[in-house]
Amino acid sequence: MLLDEMVERGLPEETRMMRDVTRKFVNEHVIPFTRQNWQQEWKMTPEDRLPRRILEVADEIGIRTPGVPEEFGGTPIDPKTEVQTFAVISEEISRGDCGLSDKMVQIWKVSVLLRNVAPRHLQEKWFPEVVKDPTFLLAHCLTEPRGASDRWLPYNVPEAAMNTRAVLKGDRWVINGRKQFISNGYDAKLYVVYANTNPKAGILQGTSSFLVPRGTKGFSVMRCNETLGGRFMNNGEMVFEDMELPKDHLLVEGTALSRAGVYFRPGKIIQGSKNLGVAVRAFEETAKYVQNYVQGGRILIKHQATAIRVAEMATKICAVRGLLREASRAVDENSPEAEVLCNMVKLYASEAVLEVCKHAMELHGGNGTMLDFGIEKLYRDASMFLHMDGTVDVTKFKIVKNLFPDTAGKYAGPEA
Image 1: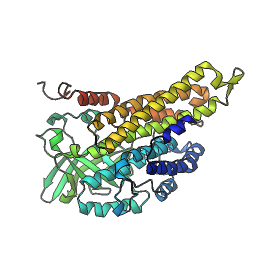
Image 2 (image 1 turned 45 degrees about the vertical axis):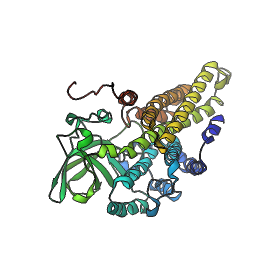
Image 3 (image 1 turned 90 degrees about the vertical axis):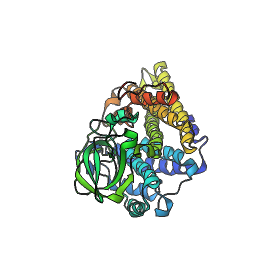
Image 4 (image 1 turned 180 degrees about the horizontal axis):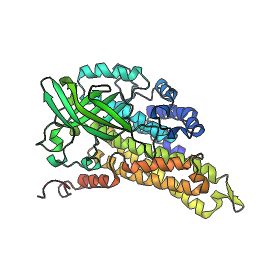
């Protein structure tokens, strides 16, 4: 198929090899599991949804720890094309299941963050733990009940500060607050937690980050958020009640949000690539269906209305892929336009992929709405992307702030 050939064009050799290994894993392990066990994602015991074996196989083939430094046992990746490789791997995993992709990419992104900001002693302690346990998950705790997408702009005023607070008392940090909508939050074993440490400063100067192990006294995982899609990643809510951390578990003081760019930019790329994987799967399934299902005496693809929709699906997929490739290279090269391109990818992919999956649903007719047919799952999964890594409207604000930094609105704080 032409779309497969376009995937290959321009990929570095290492990235192509990682893509082939991941695709084999998805075809042999992930897709068979999700299709044969379609009821599994609806289990109300989150621990029982995804078999341990799938994470073990991912670990065996080296796609679980590419963000971990090689010296600690992580999978080595060329730093010149790292984000491009992340994008290709996450697209392929998402082609099998976007929840599994969500589960995995947090390990990559948080590992990249930790290798950039964590003190050496914390890296030496925790990276080996990540590597040796195939079920070891990481989580990035930023979103709060009363502050989510609006902080992605961000508002650099005290009024937008984190509600979660951290106070240094002697040689211990004491943290109080709540986080919600956290990817891997329900079952992670290590968390990066953001808290306000200077209530008088703007959010960019008053936010600090900390490394918090699961089981720390005063830290409770309250529940698994039961989401519409992406249900093989267990999204969680957590509470900190006078939680004490050693002083040396501070990662970044004051400027944690600015320093987290190494997490956020690849995150937008990976978000777009996860979207893309869902769209590709929807297209693959639809292409098979319309060339085999007969309606009105002829296969569906020969009906003009069907052909038009299939053409739109393919075009949107190629457009997302083109923008994604351009943005991925910009991040790998640390180009000035990387920030705006990342946000454009997040915005366009989330909207275009939902349209692709809508076409897939409608071209499958009544079958498209059946739980055991597999198409409605792709539509549900695609609907989640509108709200992940910031809502689409907030992402549009960020694009405008990148394009017109001197005149774009500030949206919060006293009007100048």
